[in-house]
Length: 156
Image (cartoon, rainbow, N blue to C red; front, side, top):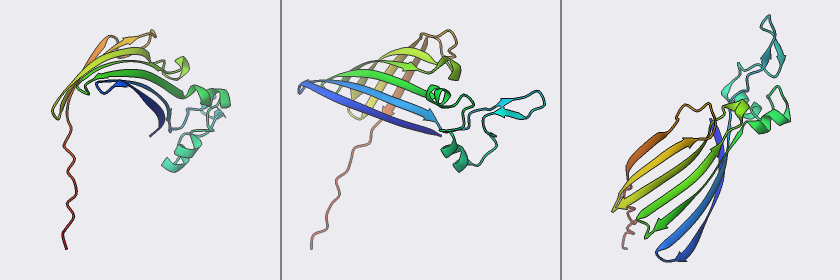
Protein backbone atom coordinates (compact mmCIF):
# COMPACT_ATOMS: atom_id res chain seq x y z
CA UNK A 1 0.00 0.00 0.00
CA UNK A 2 1.14 3.52 -0.77
CA UNK A 3 -0.01 6.95 0.22
CA UNK A 4 0.94 9.43 -2.47
CA UNK A 5 0.16 13.13 -2.59
CA UNK A 6 1.20 15.44 -5.36
CA UNK A 7 0.78 18.83 -6.86
CA UNK A 8 1.17 20.16 -10.36
CA UNK A 9 0.87 23.47 -12.13
CA UNK A 10 0.71 24.22 -15.85
CA UNK A 11 1.94 27.41 -17.47
CA UNK A 12 0.43 28.29 -20.83
CA UNK A 13 2.67 30.47 -22.97
CA UNK A 14 0.15 30.30 -25.81
CA UNK A 15 -2.42 27.75 -27.05
CA UNK A 16 0.27 25.56 -28.61
CA UNK A 17 2.76 25.41 -25.70
CA UNK A 18 2.38 24.17 -22.14
CA UNK A 19 4.95 23.70 -19.38
CA UNK A 20 3.85 21.63 -16.38
CA UNK A 21 5.75 21.37 -13.09
CA UNK A 22 4.96 18.40 -10.84
CA UNK A 23 5.98 17.13 -7.42
CA UNK A 24 4.81 14.23 -5.29
CA UNK A 25 5.57 12.63 -1.95
CA UNK A 26 5.12 8.89 -1.37
CA UNK A 27 4.94 6.85 1.85
CA UNK A 28 4.80 3.07 1.99
CA UNK A 29 2.04 2.00 4.35
CA UNK A 30 3.73 -1.19 5.54
CA UNK A 31 5.35 -2.02 8.90
CA UNK A 32 8.92 -0.87 9.44
CA UNK A 33 11.10 -3.83 10.45
CA UNK A 34 12.02 -3.62 14.13
CA UNK A 35 15.48 -4.16 15.62
CA UNK A 36 15.86 -7.72 16.91
CA UNK A 37 18.12 -9.08 19.65
CA UNK A 38 20.25 -12.22 19.40
CA UNK A 39 17.39 -14.36 20.74
CA UNK A 40 14.89 -12.99 18.20
CA UNK A 41 13.17 -10.67 20.68
CA UNK A 42 12.19 -7.18 19.53
CA UNK A 43 14.56 -4.62 21.06
CA UNK A 44 13.15 -1.50 19.41
CA UNK A 45 10.12 -0.92 17.20
CA UNK A 46 6.87 -2.83 16.83
CA UNK A 47 5.98 -6.38 15.85
CA UNK A 48 5.54 -6.44 12.04
CA UNK A 49 3.05 -9.34 12.22
CA UNK A 50 -0.08 -7.17 12.18
CA UNK A 51 -3.38 -6.85 10.37
CA UNK A 52 -3.64 -4.75 7.23
CA UNK A 53 -5.53 -1.98 9.02
CA UNK A 54 -3.05 -1.93 11.91
CA UNK A 55 -0.13 -1.85 9.44
CA UNK A 56 -1.74 1.00 7.52
CA UNK A 57 -2.17 3.30 10.52
CA UNK A 58 0.86 2.03 12.43
CA UNK A 59 3.23 2.72 9.54
CA UNK A 60 3.42 6.36 10.67
CA UNK A 61 4.63 5.55 14.20
CA UNK A 62 6.42 2.18 14.13
CA UNK A 63 10.00 3.03 13.09
CA UNK A 64 12.58 2.00 15.69
CA UNK A 65 14.46 5.27 15.13
CA UNK A 66 11.43 7.39 16.01
CA UNK A 67 10.23 10.45 14.11
CA UNK A 68 13.55 11.00 12.32
CA UNK A 69 13.37 7.51 10.80
CA UNK A 70 9.69 7.96 9.89
CA UNK A 71 10.62 11.06 7.84
CA UNK A 72 13.27 9.00 5.98
CA UNK A 73 10.52 6.63 4.80
CA UNK A 74 9.05 9.29 2.51
CA UNK A 75 10.28 9.38 -1.10
CA UNK A 76 10.17 12.52 -3.24
CA UNK A 77 9.75 12.98 -6.97
CA UNK A 78 9.76 16.18 -9.00
CA UNK A 79 9.59 16.78 -12.71
CA UNK A 80 8.47 18.89 -15.60
CA UNK A 81 6.83 18.30 -18.94
CA UNK A 82 6.79 20.48 -22.02
CA UNK A 83 3.92 19.88 -24.41
CA UNK A 84 3.74 21.17 -27.97
CA UNK A 85 0.25 21.16 -29.52
CA UNK A 86 -0.67 18.48 -26.95
CA UNK A 87 0.97 16.05 -29.38
CA UNK A 88 4.73 16.15 -28.68
CA UNK A 89 5.97 15.81 -25.08
CA UNK A 90 9.39 16.25 -23.50
CA UNK A 91 9.90 15.32 -19.85
CA UNK A 92 12.58 15.44 -17.15
CA UNK A 93 12.51 14.58 -13.48
CA UNK A 94 14.29 13.37 -10.38
CA UNK A 95 13.36 10.68 -7.84
CA UNK A 96 14.87 10.55 -4.33
CA UNK A 97 14.65 7.82 -1.71
CA UNK A 98 16.69 7.93 1.50
CA UNK A 99 19.86 5.77 1.37
CA UNK A 100 18.75 3.92 4.51
CA UNK A 101 15.32 3.15 3.04
CA UNK A 102 16.17 1.77 -0.40
CA UNK A 103 18.53 4.34 -1.94
CA UNK A 104 16.71 4.62 -5.25
CA UNK A 105 17.83 7.91 -6.73
CA UNK A 106 17.77 8.78 -10.41
CA UNK A 107 17.21 11.37 -13.08
CA UNK A 108 14.77 10.54 -15.82
CA UNK A 109 14.36 12.07 -19.25
CA UNK A 110 11.72 11.16 -21.75
CA UNK A 111 9.64 11.99 -24.75
CA UNK A 112 6.18 11.16 -25.95
CA UNK A 113 4.10 11.33 -29.09
CA UNK A 114 0.31 11.33 -29.30
CA UNK A 115 -1.36 10.30 -32.55
CA UNK A 116 -5.15 10.42 -32.27
CA UNK A 117 -6.00 8.16 -29.30
CA UNK A 118 -2.60 6.39 -29.21
CA UNK A 119 0.41 7.51 -27.17
CA UNK A 120 4.00 6.33 -27.46
CA UNK A 121 6.28 7.22 -24.55
CA UNK A 122 9.97 6.61 -23.92
CA UNK A 123 11.96 7.29 -20.74
CA UNK A 124 15.58 6.80 -19.77
CA UNK A 125 16.67 6.42 -16.13
CA UNK A 126 20.14 7.61 -15.14
CA UNK A 127 20.96 6.61 -11.55
CA UNK A 128 22.67 8.98 -9.16
CA UNK A 129 23.13 6.42 -6.36
CA UNK A 130 25.47 3.42 -6.38
CA UNK A 131 22.80 0.87 -5.48
CA UNK A 132 20.10 0.99 -8.13
CA UNK A 133 18.59 -2.08 -9.79
CA UNK A 134 17.49 -0.28 -12.96
CA UNK A 135 20.83 1.24 -13.98
CA UNK A 136 20.72 2.96 -17.37
CA UNK A 137 17.27 1.61 -18.18
CA UNK A 138 15.10 2.63 -21.10
CA UNK A 139 11.33 2.23 -20.76
CA UNK A 140 8.81 2.23 -23.59
CA UNK A 141 5.03 2.47 -23.32
CA UNK A 142 2.27 2.32 -25.89
CA UNK A 143 -1.17 3.29 -24.64
CA UNK A 144 -4.64 3.99 -25.96
CA UNK A 145 -7.04 6.52 -24.52
CA UNK A 146 -10.67 5.78 -25.28
CA UNK A 147 -12.80 8.71 -26.34
CA UNK A 148 -15.20 10.07 -23.78
CA UNK A 149 -18.79 9.65 -24.86
CA UNK A 150 -21.36 12.23 -23.95
CA UNK A 151 -24.40 11.10 -22.07
CA UNK A 152 -27.55 11.35 -24.17
CA UNK A 153 -30.54 12.71 -22.33
CA UNK A 154 -33.85 11.09 -23.14
CA UNK A 155 -36.44 13.37 -24.70
CA UNK A 156 -39.83 13.60 -23.03
